Length: 155
Image (cartoon, rainbow, N blue to C red):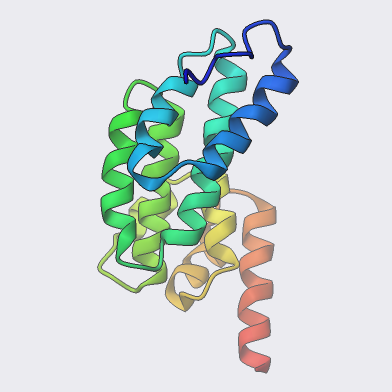
């Protein structure tokens, strides 16, 4: 069954909800193909938004474990023509690297989006949080990082 079946006349809100439902239920083996098909929707903003929500949900569930690498390779191929989605996957990979305390470059974190900096500022890597407390892109990021550090020192 085509992902667009029964949806072609539906408005974008209905299609968005249907895509999220299909993405949540898809078998791992079929996930990348479904992502590609969702991204063929004529309303590209809506389609990318549905896929982004799915990517964030799946990456949050997988980033700390061994299945992440295989998953991110497959999904990167499915989103290669969508720069924002590809960037989000790269940032999830950096978040994974920082969280698991694998080798990473502070400049990569400094150059990352507000989304990743804020997510990292509330994370577990003290070195990364210290960097963001001093040099986070926004006042909110710097304050969040300082608050995280203060909570750590009191624990």
